[in-house]
Amino acid sequence: MKRKKVTIEEAKKSGGSKYRDMVQKGLEEYERMPDEKKHQIQVYYGYGKGKTTALMGLAMRALGAGKKVAIVQFDKGYDGVHEHYGERHVIRKLKEIGYNIDMYITGCERMNEDGTFRFKNADVDFDEAKRALSITHELIVNGEQNLLLLDEVLAASAYHLIEEKDVLDIIDLFNKNRRFEMVMTGHKLFDGLEERVGLITEMRKVKHYFDEGIQAREGIEF
Image (tube, rainbow, N blue to C red; front, side, top):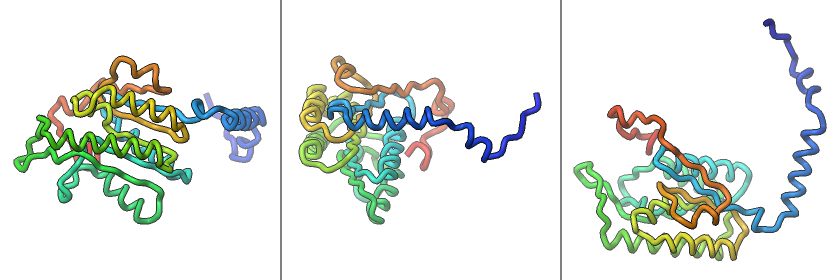
């Protein structure tokens, strides 16, 4: 079937006022919403690739809209020399040139000198997890951010660096101070979490090249 050629001017005429009016009505209704509806908790979880990637995409979108972003990374520390996460270079540069973004890195280096990964938790890992919780509480109560991103907070719970109750306490504190959007990531949900948040997206592995022997690549996975 031969497609009829349409100019951009003709295409513009196809846009009616109905959609525009619907969007405007939605914006007006949003402004009238109570804070518990206006500011939500989002969760991205699962064993598939993309949780932190989604988080960073939200950060970029918020910054592009002129909003202030705060990121707390649980158990993603480093030794001050070997940076394992490429996005942190960009976040630091964005901060330098005036974008309103703050990043709080917690955790200890888990890469050993021989390239292996340290899985076992040491006492200092628990201390760092407590520090992450303290930073999170302070931001919820006194922070000026429009978007608070808690990277791997659910992983910290799943691997027993913090308790499930600590996550629920974060939500309770947020509910008393609803003035921004909050996002959590990690591998697992736990009982009682689903009914406390507004959005849950599961990152489920359907297929992954890691199973074919392709290891994590700089600039793609980290």
